[in-house]
Length: 510
Image 1 (cartoon, rainbow, N blue to C red):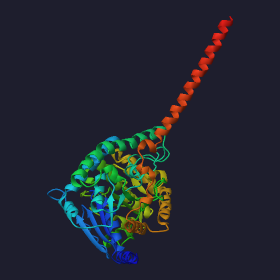
Image 2: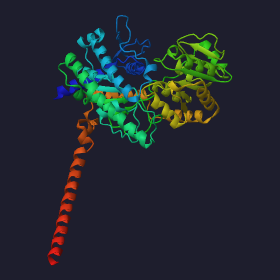
Image 3: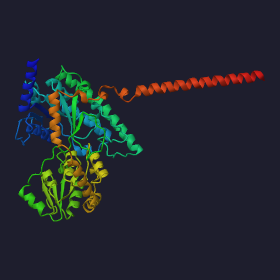
Image 4: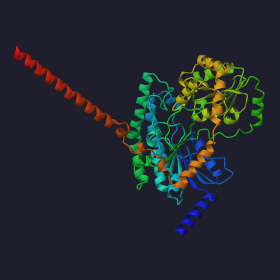
């Protein structure tokens, strides 16, 4: 017994010196990689041996630990496996968008599993103490935890939502929690609650009839020794959520859900000299305009683009516009570049407004520095993020598809002249940064906790193992209704019989 204890102490000592072996997999071809790589570098900085898998090359390397970046290249020319036209997606209704993403999710999982570089990783003799996987319509990829025999942490790049609530047993009543594809606040009308409920149910239909069947086929093909997707989803040890109650709606969270929103925002760095000079000399202030990495201004409709150019050109403020094309003849107050150091710009005191597509990363960054927003949502959770900005009073939302020169100009004037938007953004910034522990430190602690204990089954609520009809008490309600109906029927028959007897007696007397 003494020998076993000594071996255990030695193992613990080795782990504390050399750290754990951690696989961070973010194969989604979107900006999710920024969150995954930031987390991976933070874990490496904490002294761990981290392998980061994604479809981009991480050019920022950590100073400490051991960090390996495995880049997945898709297609002959290394193109992304899925490149949807987001400006076309914005024309779809909510149900069509959810269905489309379910189909794209299947293609993404298939592309990842067929990728030669990913297959090489699976065939390697590598071992891992814990695996962190991006949660994005890729439930079949949870089999890599089974393959490597390691506990699994899922990372949701947004707040608690339909994709993680179901598999974590987290309660999310659609009566006051809007779906991630909606554009409602918590106080919904009757018809909004009705649509919100239908959207939540449609997520489940897509999951069980589109996502799970197809991805189960992939699991059987590539991981024949592993269970089906439904079982894999129940073996998640922890969920990291890219959220925090300071800038998200307060919702119930089960113990296996950990809020680490804002962990990717670093201390601001020095701006390039030319940009520093431009922003310092902007006497009327600066407006920063970026539609993220997936929406290029060159793909916009000509009338929409012209409305943007005309409106921005009339402003007194200096406008920094992230744009993938040159626009000759524009107003001198507009500065166009293909890339800007976004977070460092938002940290500058002269920034008065951020015009954004409403992506969560951009929203988190602008709130960290207390800058109000004009949101132009296009797809996905951008509409919900924009609705939250309106509800919290730090922004205005205009659907990108409905943008005109008139409504764009009115929104800009209101945001630039009314101090309430900046005051609300600053208030949320203070709340966001007032935490007992830094979000990155929290992520590192819980990752080490899962690795140290080989999982965390004690954090899992019983709802994970319950079929939907038990969870919703359908069987109990049906039984009670049956009893009530039976009792009412018996009472009715008894009263009717008594009434009939009374009538018979009266007839006989007569």
